[in-house]
Amino acid sequence: MDNQTAAELLEINRRFYSEFGDAFAATRRRIQPGVSHVLESIPREIASDWLDLGCGSGALGQIWAGQQRSGSYTGLDFSGPLLREAQKTTGGLSGEQLTLNYVPGDLMDPDWTGVLAGAHFDGVLAFASLHHIPGRDNHLRLFRQIRSLLKPGGRFVFSVWQFQNSPKLMQRVQPWSKAGITEDRLEPGDTLLDWRYALPDNKEKTGLRYVHLFNEDELACLAVETGFSSADRFYSDGAEGNLALYMELKVIG
Image (cartoon, rainbow, N blue to C red; front, side, top):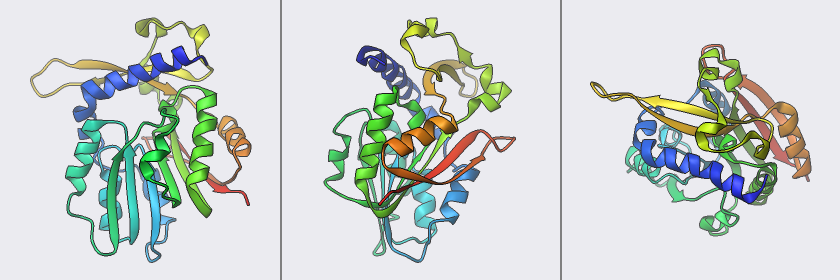
């Protein structure tokens, strides 16, 4: 994918979160069943440091603190409205045993890791965020950067949307002509979806979002090429329990 196309896809999502960020945050105040399952696999009694990429409105940070974990939780997101919601949601939850921190960062910035000031982590989480990154070259770069942030034996756990399993969501797939982009400039799996929101007694508003539809083989190849081994994978979320694919990767060596 050329840089111009990637920039146009990113602008679609930046425009969406700029216009709908507060409304979107209001719909994301609980964690998904798959995330709850992942949390069960992270020991609470051992102090550890975790980074949450695309932390959104702070729902996970709030639960992290509520589970009386120790160590540190750092949430990173590029959306100002979502970060403000996260800080509001989790304000005052830090204590002697746990430090909660939120930082602005754009995963498409080649130097985004700089905002972490050299910190390393026992684990990196990325729930429902990687599928907004366009282009395989960027996927490879991001996986390598995440690997560089992990301590020896560290875990990278993420989820990607599997909207093809929902007839309702498939009805929201839009032609790329609505975004002024021709399909020959895109990679397989690149999809344009609409998002609808209406306040009480107000006319419904519609926004557009770019999403890349990952499959298991694609993610397995990314893992191998960037020095990870695949530890676990499962499907969860949605009415049928298959709206998201969760994967855990571990550092090789």
